[in-house]
Length: 320
Length: 278
Image (cartoon, rainbow over all chains, first blue to last red; front, side, top):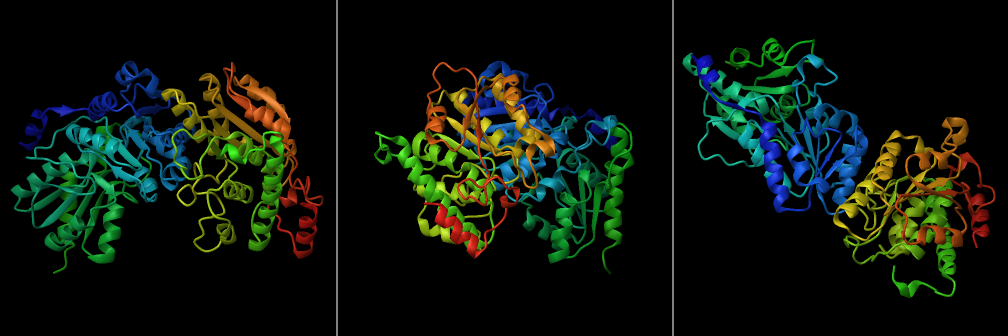
C-alpha cells in the first residue's frame, strides 16, 4: 500500500530548483556569479550562462583553481556559487576548501552536484559519500543537504543572503516533496517531519521521504517513530538531537553518505558525550561495489524496510 | 600609499630606505623568534618594497576599500618580509612585530586575513595565492573595476600544478589587470629548482600560456618600478614578471645558499648581518 502511494507521488529533480532559483537571484543581484569546472550541463547552468554570460566563469577541468578563483571573486566583492560534481569539488579541491574558503573565511558557496552515490555504476571515484566527513571537519562551513525541490530553492536563497562559506549538496535523484504544512526553512534547525515517542529517525537529503515512509510502516506495527529532517548537518541542531534522545530514547540516522563522520557520526558524537542512547546509523560502510543507485540503496538499507529494521534494532538496544 | 610619502625627484629612494628597514626588521623578527624563512624574505624584499612604496594604490586606514590594488603573497612562508612591508605601509603598529609567532599572535607563521589588515587571503600551502589572485582579477574584469592585482609566487612554488591551471585561465581571459611576479632565486627548500624539478625555460612556458613576459633584476628598484609601475596601456595579456633574485640577498654569508631557506642566525651571525644591512 505504501509503495503504491509512493509511486503515485510526483517526484522532482532538485537540480532544476537550484538552477531556477539561482537565475532568479542573479537577476536581482549582480554580485552573484557562478564558477564551474566544465560543469555547466551537470550543474544545470545552461540557462544561467545564456542569461548572464559575463557572470559564468568556466575555468575548465581544474577544481583546485575553481575553488581558489571562487575565493578571489569573494575578495572582489562577488557572491560566487562554485558548482561542480560533489566528488571532484570536495575531493580534488579539499585543501583549497580548507585554506582558501574555510580558514580564510571567504563568502563562497560550494555547490556539490550529484552527491552521494548518484553516479551509481560509475563507481567509487565518482561517488561523493566522504564529503560530509571532510567538510564537517572544517568548522566555518555550513553544510546543508536539502531533502526536496522546495527545500533546495529555500536553501539556495538562504545561502545567497548568508555572509559566510556554505556547502550545498544538490541531489539529482528525483524525490517527492515532503508533505508538511507551513514549512519554513531555518538553517541549523531540524525540521520535524513526523512526531513520535518510541524512536527518532534523523535523516537528510534524499533519504528523508524514505524515513517518513518507514515511520508510517512502523506506526502500523504499533511503533511510534519521530522523523527529523536534519538538512543542516554542520552546525548540528544539538537541541533537537538532545530532545530526541530524552523523549524517545533511541535514534536512527539515515544519510546517502559514509556512516563515519557524517550525520550519523555527528549524532553519535553528540549523544555519546551528553545523552547516551542507542544510535543505529544507516548509510554506506565504505567504497561501494558496482551497482545502480536503486541497487545500492536497497542493498545497504537505504529503503523503507531497511530503515524500519534499523529502528527495531535501536529499540531492542534500549535499556530495560 | 599616500602620494605624500613619495619623493618624486627620486622615487627609488623611498623604496630603498623601506627595503633596508624591512630587511633589518625581518631579520630581527626571525632571530628573536628563532623561527622563520629569512632567505626567501630577503629575495622578495625589493619586490615588496617597490610594490608598497612605488606601485600599489591602497589606504591602510581602509583595508577593505573596494578600489584598492591587491597584492597576494602566495609564498606565504615569507612572513618576515610581508609583515614588515605591511607594518611599514601603516597597516598596524610596529609593536605588533614583537609578537611574531608568539602565543595567539596576529602574526602567525603564515598570513591570515582575519588576523591582520592588508592580508588579502590566507596562504602557506603553496600554489594557493595565484588562483585566488586570478579570481580577484576576474571580479575586476566582470565589474569593470580599475584596480590591479599582483601576486608573488616563489619559483619552486611554480612546481605546484594549480599555478598552471590559473595561468591557463588568465591567458585565455586576457587578464591584463593581473600581474604575476615569480621570485626567481633558483633555490627551493633543499636544493636548486633546476636540479629538483627544472622550471626553465619559464619565460617560454608563460608565453605559451598567453602571457606577456618580462625578466628583471629583482633587486634593482628602478627596473622593478619601471616594470611593475607601468600602466596596463595597450597590453591585452596578463603580465608575468620573472624577478631574478638572490636568496638571502643583502647578507653576504646568506646569499645563494639553500640552508637559509629556514635557517636562523646565531648571535654572532645576527650581529654580522645587522652590520651589513646599513
